[in-house]
Length: 299
Ligand code: PAF
Picture 1 (tube, rainbow, N blue to C red):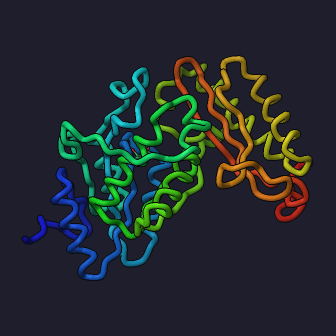
Picture 2 (picture 1 turned 45 degrees about the vertical axis):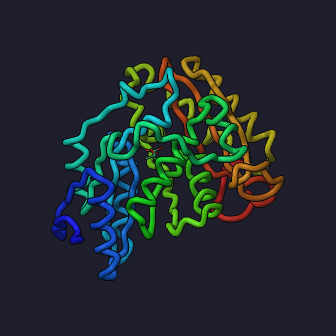
Picture 3 (picture 1 turned 90 degrees about the horizontal axis):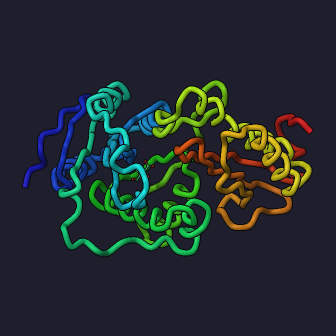
């Protein structure tokens, strides 16, 4: 069977798994690589950075999926309210030089009796998973489906959703999926706020208070040379100055989200509510003597 039409250097939009799968297979058969940027739409500069990184890989066709995945939203979460500016998103993909947009409907992806999901293991119940039961099973299930449908050589995800990135890497390793997963550093506003599709929910006052997350993280990271307790104390102290921020968790872990090392690379993560909006953020931290090497840090 021939693949559906694909025009080079234009954005080609497909709705069904069959169509996008056949186009991807045809491109790979003639030696092109396929780089997938999975998204839920409402594209911002963070997504633009993922697309830009994907575009840099030689001989690669950039594909983006846009699908607000019901499986990863809890009952009282913002699935219905989640922004869906499809026309703007397609314009963003065109500007970024993506050549494939995969925009399925839920009925294109799931049969009514679909019941099998990907289990994230114990890390799926920690941090984000403790507040959002079932969230990571939902994420991993849709990402596994996208990987199986598109069969990308590479897939790009933001470090902003750090636990998601770690779990997707584990899934690819544990289930022998042949896609190389690449993490891209978080894009921030000039004042430090991490870009997120959910920032649109913040009122102007809440937007100011929301700086408490990045302020906590940068205060914590600067204390790395003094060890884990100092990092957490500094971060707690900084966020306490923002009464509009209610912390859900503030945690220091290893880069694989296991226990933080005494000395070496770690990750400081925060989740908090600002009004009714739940935001997350994280940064790398060098702990102990490891923090004494490299670029000069504040002590
Ligand atoms: O990070 C997101 O936007 C979503 O969790 C993802 C990876 C597209 C899965 O729905």
